[in-house]
Image 1 (cartoon, rainbow over the protein chains, first blue to last red):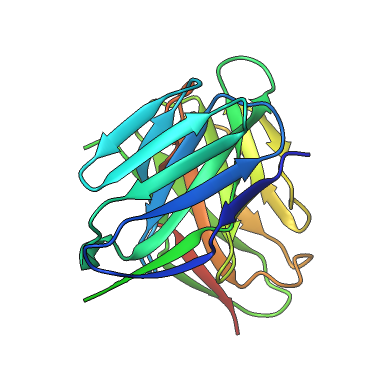
Image 2: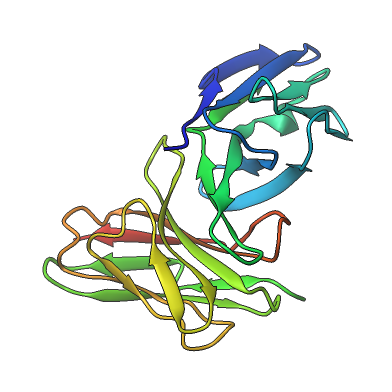
Length: 115
Length: 111
């Protein structure tokens, strides 16, 4: 059974600081996704990582994937208040045929950026 | 605009009642999914469907049922057998290895 663990689960940081959220998973996969969720809202896709060594950047966020270590990181640079949200990683649980897949989500990291 | 529409946004269920959550997509995606989210938790998969007229149970299917009669529609019924249905329900769709696109969610509360 695929397990996905994120840490930390809660992160309070000051504006302007840097930090990293970690996502570990238990079985081989080369498809990992990061999502953002604002309170009471749905999930918004941030990054799609589809190969070992993949690195994607958007604004102050950068995500990477190391499939050998079964680890993805989401790095926050010079945080601003608008980044406050819950961040989820999700891992492809394996294909059951065709072009479809199942996702297993981590519990999420609640990020609060303080002035 | 292409997207996924869930309705209603809020739903209240009485004890012993079945309720149906709607999910419609116009993205022409083959696969559709239903997830449940409890406060402070990640998403758990209820059911998924890869093609019309076919669907599979996810990790927490007990007390739920689905149908996939049309490519664009994947309704979820929460039956009276689901003893703790209060949660946020999210519908999603995918095509290949692209990211899942989510609807805006339905918040179900037992009254």
